[in-house]
Amino acid sequence: MPPAVLVLLLTAAVLHAGWNILLKTADDPLRTAGRGMVVGSAVLIPAATVGWLVTGRPAIPPEAWAIALASGSLEALYFSLLSAAYARGDLSLVYPIARGTAPVLAVAIGLVFLGERLGPVGTVGVALLLIGILSLQRPWAVFRRSSELTPRMRQAAWLAVATGVTIASYSAVDLNGARIVAPWLYVAMIWGFTAAILLIGIAVVDRRARVSVGLALASVAVATETDDVAILGPTPGRPAAEPAGGGERGSLLRSDDWGRAAVGGLVTVGAYLLVLVAFRFAPLTAVAPVRESAIVLVSGWGSFRLGEAATRRAGLGRLAAAAMIVVGAILLAVEP
Image (cartoon, rainbow, N blue to C red; front, side, top):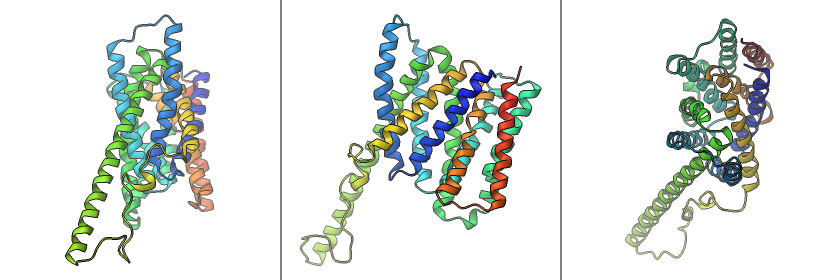
């Protein structure tokens, strides 16, 4: 891997870490992700259109549109699973499991299905990266102690695993898409599809919420009529019904939190564009593990800044794991 590509990937890792911290600390991770994709699409699509016109309107093969749609669908699923996991569990639990699962699957896909090969130095580098990542996230310890976790935390852990599967899947899809069309054009295509699919998904969730609220109100009305009591307001002792569309969480277009979403959307666009550029110069087996170095930043932030406390011994263990990741990244950078 050329050193310049390594710099691109490490920069992308920092940007991605920042986006996930914003997402986790948002009031509603799913709608924040949806807003972020909308902002990213609003910037990318016009810019890509101008670039396409300026460069002579190069042909976009039909398979590129199909690949972009597949990637956008997987990205929307990724955001849905990740948001659900963040709504249930800690950042330092969810992010390491999700991002740590992905490179293991990505390397397997690259070697088994895409015919990629690593030399001895690259093999050692990938091994050190994966050992460092797994030492940091310790998934075996999480699931061995699952009986001590709350039900929501256990749900978060399994949702994080499912998120990792989607990450490996869209990484493999994007490897091909970024080689068919220019990365800046391809990223605009997948962002548009992702935003559209997320908006549809959120609309479906809101519709179901309105139906649930309607059914709840109907049940209250029937019960009250049975007691011959007029419904003039919320029954004493019973909370008022949530407004249609999920209350404060139901409106994608409400004014607050758009600043956070806008920043996050632009940050994740930059991170992903850097990764797509890297795909043109390095194989999936090298790109996927290096980009997961953000695990170190996010785990540290979640553990210490967000109050997910760690002991001194655990902190030293995180430093050792981070050192493995750095050494592994350097070995990949000098791979012949």
